[in-house]
Image (cartoon, helix red, strand yellow):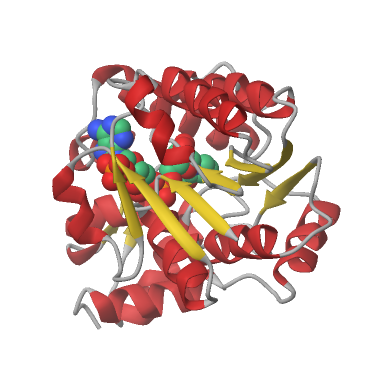
Length: 285
Ligand SMILES: NC(=O)c1ccc[n+]([C@@H]2O[C@H](COP(=O)([O-])OP(=O)(O)OC[C@H]3O[C@@H](n4cnc5c(N)ncnc54)[C@H](OP(=O)(O)O)[C@@H]3O)[C@@H](O)[C@H]2O)c1
């Protein structure tokens, strides 16, 4: 089995590529520039090309590929990158296309970075290839951008008071590895969700417990904006997303939680375990 991973140097992709390679799969990772190759584990085949800048040149990266896993960073060219990748995969005769979307994408398509997932997901479903979608909830790792505030005793991710069924990127990568390594997933859109409903206060309390000092939930979204540099359009997009979470939450049903557990073959990682691991990695505990 040869898998092409697009987005293989990020939070989910790094873990997925490592897992696939450790399980003996042949893995090719498409990276947009030469300096990204150093991020890949040894034994992984890099394909250095930007789909957006050089789509014809990118075609060769799909040669001999059996399955594609793709996630795309929320950038202004996300739809172009994602839909072109589907087109190139189809031309190359790829058997299966696995695409990472977003939990309840249709309901959140008023947000530009989710509208792009709906468009790309439609291209994937209509491609004629076998397909599977993975639709994760809010990543635990969204904390990463706010490390400085956490060190100062403030939890600033504005997820609000209702809560999310947040998930560890480790579990998303594990779910993707399962889909890419087994049959029975064609035409499925899997919610990838945690068991706990986490609101801002619960996240702050988990950090407080692990750091053994007070961490308070800072409810002012401006503080999160200040800690998270990003283009203006994405700032408005994500602020609107957090307003929606604050009002309605982003909570999975029992059925959706059970579906994640079945796919993983175990319970998803607890937020407290993620915080313990992350605080140790950051040298905070
Ligand atoms: N955060 C959440 O709560 C959440 C929830 C559900 C879904 N999602 C979706 O999950 C995806 C992100 O997954 P992730 O966090 O694992 O990815 P990530 O860490 O953001 O990295 C994804 C890839 O983005 C590429 N990249 C880096 N800078 C870029 C740029 N300026 N322009 C274009 N590409 C760039 C990198 O590939 P190269 O090596 O080629 O540069 C990298 O492998 C997004 O589609 C997001 O909307 C996120």
